[in-house]
Image (tube, rainbow over all chains, first blue to last red; front, side, top):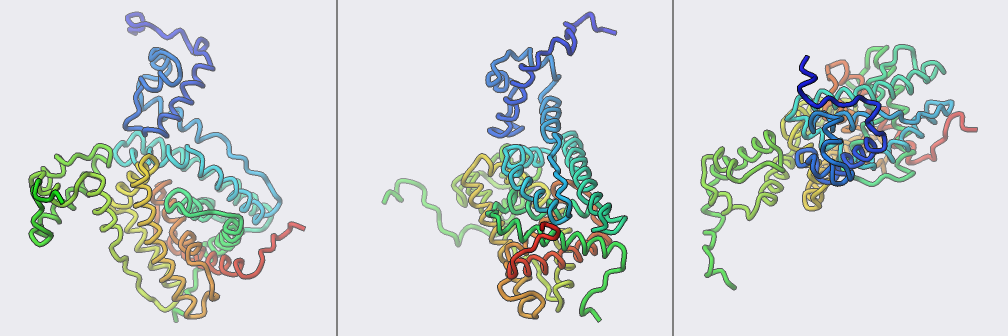
Amino acid sequence: MATTTRRTPAGAAVLRREITAAIRDAVMHELAAVGYGRLSIEAVARRAGVGKTAIYRRWSNKLEMVLEIVTKVAGRKMPMPDTGTLRGDVEILLRILATALQHRLASQIIPDLLAEAARNPQIAETLHATLRGYSAELGTSLVGRAVERGELPPGTDPDTGVDVVLGPLYWRLAVARGPVDDAYLEHMADAVVAGLHASAASAVVPAVVPGAA
Amino acid sequence: MATTTRRTPAGAAVLRREITAAIRDAVMHELAAVGYGRLSIEAVARRAGVGKTAIYRRWSNKLEMVLEIVTKVAGRKMPMPDTGTLRGDVEILLRILATALQHRLASQIIPDLLAEAARNPQIAETLHATLRGYSAELGTSLVGRAVERGELPPGTDPDTGVDVVLGPLYWRLAVARGPVDDAYLEHMADAVVAGLHASAASAVVPAVVPGAA
């Protein structure tokens, strides 16, 4: 091993946490401000008030640094309160999501990395794995509880459920940028619960197209 | 007016259509390949096989060129076949969308411009107006027909309807990048129709939260 020919990092114990936190905040800020393509290690170091060495002691390059920080922040556990009913769980989840989708992580950083992902397979793989993991956790929790309560049939697909719950709000807040108020969230909760029931039923019983005869 | 002090464009009549088409194709290709931030007029001219003058005769800068071309391409009428039932209309629409969302316009160019929009108010305004116009047309057509047929109550909100129809598929194909097959589209069509009914009903009758007593 050639470890003696280069300066060896002194180990994780000496990577001071407050410096790591300052770098992480600086990376999130720079990503939101200029995007991945234009983000520079110099600007991150300047904003964090550290030397570039402090960054290269932690990550070997920009891609590694950004992916590790973003997946850690995105992967933080979302609160998923158990309200006792599917309708209640869906409504509180929509309210949490409506707030989360207006945070810079969802409104600027994820869209920017999704755009980069179209051109960078390593970003694509990491980002989509993170989003799928997040979706799977959310689906398993929401649908799993409803199945336990007898509100949805056993075998209901959590993945389709997540699309029904997350999709409309994501489209409205992150893509079309329409307004969201209390009345909207109420209607959407009703629509989502009905959609979950119908999707679960259609996966069990073959779908009948009304009026198709 | 100072029009005599600069070379005056000879008018729209002499802007040859095949050259405009070649430039438009080149812009779409470059946007997909390198994104808005790294797109250069030089590269567009080279790819289109024209001089930079041909571009500047049509648009005064990169932003104007990209916004006009993308909104024109995105604004092309989507086919919206009338199948005679809401369920049928929803299913065919989901199939058309599933194909459209895998086109480079939706999978690379729109995500890239959405990311730019977070930093450029002019892109944001144009892009969101285009997406909202597109959504409104789709909603009015789909929901309008269903109301005429008596399948949805008069006064059903087309905007919420669009979120319910477009959102789940957009989330799955453009964000989480999960698989979509025939069975998925069938379940989703059932979920969407149920969601549309529930959302329409909840907008008329005050929503009752089951088990909230």
